[in-house]
Image (cartoon, rainbow, N blue to C red; front, side, top):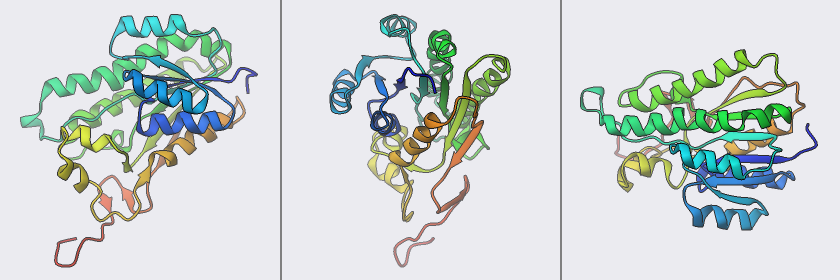
Length: 253
């Protein structure tokens, strides 16, 4: 590992991003907690001894200001900022929502990566993309989100080829079903009943800390080790379309 231990985590205001920041801080990293919600990142940074940073990955000026305000040494970038919006069939899709998903998951992620890449190469560092098992295959109502996450995965894959002669490693962590406070709620525009139904009957979906642990492990590996793709699912989810649910008696399973 590089002697410099500064990590940048985007989307650090909640969920996987916040859990990852805590996990890395516990391993001695100085973590730059970056997200749009200033109060959240300030509270998290105060908790873990990190550095708060307001960042909107969809805004070019915000990314430029963020990069300019960082120190020269960055050894780890965790591209976690992203979102899922809606689950309508293609015929009824909200294309404005699709644009927001692509702007965040694909364009925003790439913009931050471009801005920090010279520092990461200099530090012989690591870039971790938090993609999704949604990138593996299409499912009904998932065209927009599956497409955005698949495109993000292609960014990671192309970079691994393009930078094969450079001292930087590219990692793709693809979580399956993860229950967090906001992911499904945001997807269904605040509809708590629809959000809760995603996890109905699943005894132990993953939690944010489970995914954070995989990032912490990758960050601890020697610099020559490249985990191309790590898929992590709960035991109850054998595949994107196959989830074991135990529902209340009298309800269909």
